[in-house]
Length: 417
Image: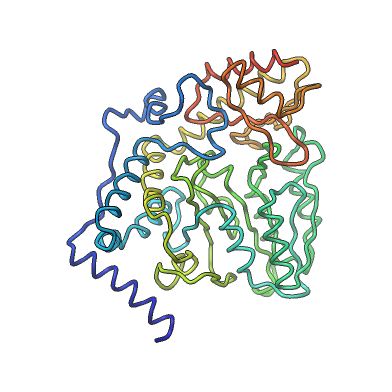
């Protein structure tokens, strides 16, 4: 039996099982007593230790109550009768893609489900239809996952890699300089422009729509198979910045949903404006065509994957714009407060247009790891260290922190010098 037929039968069998079971997609479940307009009520949905200031919660997210409940519900169903419950949840992945599409302002067909940003980047850069003689243009500011995925793509295809620097001093980064450097670097052989939306090592947020416009101009008159594709690691903007995906003007975006979205751990997605330039790499269990074709098959932690729907619903209930404004308010408060302290150098740009939730700083004479240890042990403030050769103290104000906690953090950092 050929593979396409096998997969079709598998998909049809699951759908038939669901129909026979008479199961409908459950209605969104809202936490009892939850007031989405009250930030204290939002914070109360998380089981985070109340005696800590959680400024690293975005690194690997805690689960809010609706997500925990969904995970528990799916886990119990699978434990009770795995075969029957798999049939009951035959459309669960479609429900997740639909929820993601509603959140992003796109079509569900444009979304593939993954386990992480790293998986999405691997599927993207290894699956792109590249050839020897074409070029991958990337930057010096990207995370290891992008660098390694590009290295493997280059080795497979013969396409060359070229890296550029988008800014010299992160705190002084500006849109004009960034866009001009990209424009000057794009050449006739450039097939991929690989960038990161928000740099996890500095907090700089790239003007992705403006970069997309430059690439569109460069593509004018080019054959379709030679046009440059804008590919984005979006994980530190996703869930923290208020924008529809089409407004970014990119071609692909990979992200985890277990950071700023506070979705189930071990979940993510890959968005494609079109899948024509991408070859699927891993056999799928998600049906033919569109995003399903690019969703890796096999048995996953389904109780987590299926609960991504509730993570999107939780954010939508609070309001994407309200969440972004809350993050911006606290990040700006933190940057402005830290900038007034002696011996503290704020690395992240002040402008909200060039930053998001991540705030990085340097403490004069104190290594970043030491500063983070002291903040936790002496002040009960949880920060992180940037995972790069150049290490900074990194904070992530979010929906689980408050302006009062930001004031406390500023005072605590002032004691480190």
